[in-house]
Length: 295
Image 1 (cartoon, rainbow, N blue to C red):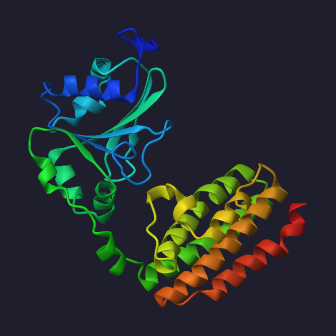
Image 2 (cartoon, rainbow, N blue to C red; image 1 turned 90 degrees about the vertical axis):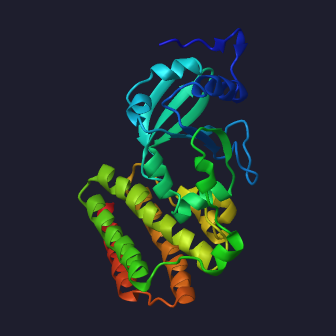
Image 3 (cartoon, rainbow, N blue to C red; image 1 turned 180 degrees about the vertical axis):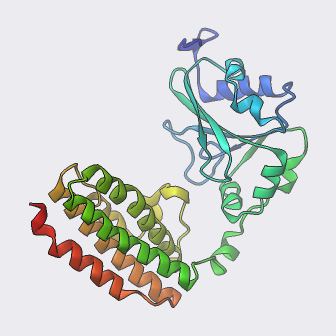
């Protein structure tokens, strides 16, 4: 695999990558359509020097693009490539670091898969924020719909009472579970739950709170969370993560629980959902009572 910093005697830029990609894709039968999304296609929160390049590839032979790296050589020299699940749409993407340090995500979809996912609100929201058709040999771009933000905010899909209750109960259950792992000395497992599972549940509540209480539109997977989350949550973020040490993990656990409780109570009140105070009290009591045993 060639790993030169240069192609054609000049350092590669994203514009060069797109030009090289188009030169290859226009005559490549496997590529039926290519659509740029993300920061390099957006008008709000546009790309900066650290932004990557996101391209959707529509093909009826995904194996040619996912199982092989050979086609990347037509675009430029690269040093790293691997496969990963897409953040939205439930497919796979080939992620590539082209020289000198240009990261590109090629999300690969079959024609049928792409057409089916266009009905999802999260996908419509991605396209609402901006997209650019690079190639379309099958006129699939005509099927793309975007969310009307004004209409979407008026009839925003919020959790049902059962879903809300399940997330709150799940969070507090794992607060107790994490504390038990800490007490057993299983710090890796405890920290993994605290910083992964519990943070995912906290993020879900932050999103619901933003829409229900503050009437703001959250981005997926915590993107630009500092811009749309409640300011009190943003101020608390610095306290939510711990070092690999029992006492500091206990501190971060309590801070995470207190922020979750604040947001969950307000969200429940705005949505008309009953807040499970019994679960909150049980979790806080357990975490606080057993603190001395960590020392």
